[in-house]
Image (cartoon, rainbow, N blue to C red; front, side):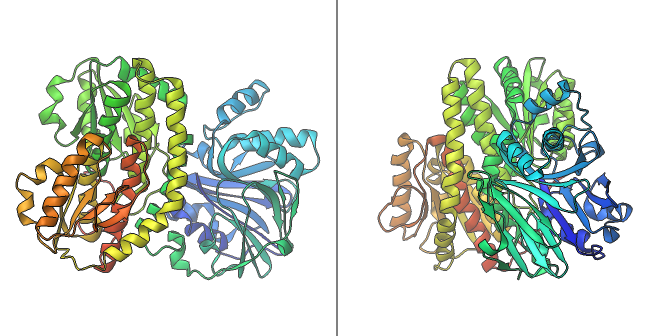
Length: 604
């Protein structure tokens, strides 16, 4: 995954264009950066692992001596953040350079075939197969576009690829499920992962159709629809004015990273399905199946995801997994760890100090560690015996949003696959769940704007938002805890999460007509009577509870969610509570992306 920014000009690429365009795409990846350009008719590659701003001086990004170049900033979803995995990547001859965004699902299949044919791979990232496959195609065909069409029919996944091919002074591309835009301005044309990165360089942007191959040169661009072979030209497309200010570019036009990342949740769910490779899922599941005892270790949002994950393992695999705060683990459970213990450690950053220190202690006592992380180059990935990448993409805002739902999807796949070993599920069950996660992604993409409109109207109602309760039962109970955490982080108000039954053991005393009480409808039928009882008791005290769920209860203030299978309920219902926390934070003028006193990863 990552950000693509390329330029082709009638004369030399102006100074600073590649660097500044790529800098606005750092939100898409910060694990490495590189550029490939033509010097004469030969490709030159400059690249390094690390954040763009730190490595740019040594790579001469500010002053590339060429009229055509492709640049990239990488997010390590497959392959460690090291030099050999940093884009651009070359074929065997050095005549083809490729950069990519997204995930190629079947790359291992092609890698094995290509290696058998004598191809030499330098790294472990999936994008590299694109260069080698194009090399093979061009050995048989003169027409690069025909070769790209054939390539696009072979590769599965969600990806965008941009190529330099000697000696052409063109940028070739494939768009298949990941965004690409073409910018026109002055003496240059550009290819980028988003429109805001083009601000100041291009006046007009053209969105590349999905399922397209094509090229961009200094005079214009052309494309071919893969499905029917029809030609795409600028005259057949409606251009968009590049109007986003440069400083908004990093956020893709959104006012805050948090809102941008909430809206990226559907894409993140699809990425989970591509990032979690079955061979590692099988190995991790076998380990859990053979465990004497098992724990989930995490902190904060990851702990809440782990708590929901324990429901998944219990229901879908018949395995009891005990979720424990990584900070509490040494005092609570360490004495029970022995050979045969499995620890499932979850950390979005992979650098959380309590998680790292606890898994080290567990390993010393003979435990096997399965890591789940959004950062494959992290200490958690290094310390784990097996790790599963969630592949949500970079998350900048301190309040975690898309990484939470992506972690839930990963745990759901993990538990379902484990169930095949315990006999609780079948391969057909697992495939059905994969399809249901894919359907949930499409459903959220359709509904997320509706959720946002409902939330925006709710925050304007007459509530006293000094404090709030969030409550639910069953598999959505941990989501109540997570919802309260989001209100603290983004809106910076006091909030508490409760199990519905516990509301009647003290907390209900504070309920009044203007006290915000958010009830997430339970997914279990047996929990519905308690839910209705708590709702009625709150209304009898004059309160106006905010209800999140598929049901409607009288004149309650409701954020209507679609009906989904039980295990998808926390994924769907998490979006309204995240949006509520965000919109309240905006209303209170909070520093939403960077709450005071908090950091994205607690590393000390």
